[in-house]
Length: 99
Ligand SMILES: [Zn+2]
Image (cartoon, rainbow, N blue to C red; front, side, top):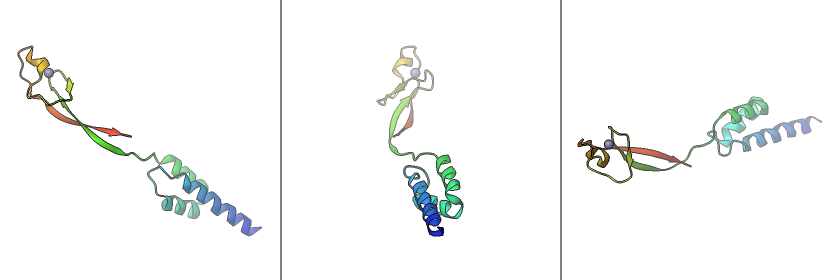
């Protein structure tokens, strides 16, 4: 009787810890919380922690400070503002592409 309760407790702790895969908490940390602070606490913790973010790469763009238009290729001055006789230097900005 007692062993089946203990087995169910550890099994539910492991199941809760498996939910941590792909989240910003490690399996070991989730298992530790589930064992020492009950699997219900572990479940609440794991579900409140957000999913892992993976930054695959940066995208470099060039933005005009005047018209806010973005260009994929580097220009020395903004071609759109150049038509209005303004010479605006483009600023290099990097966007995170998150998968
Ligand atoms: Zn411009």
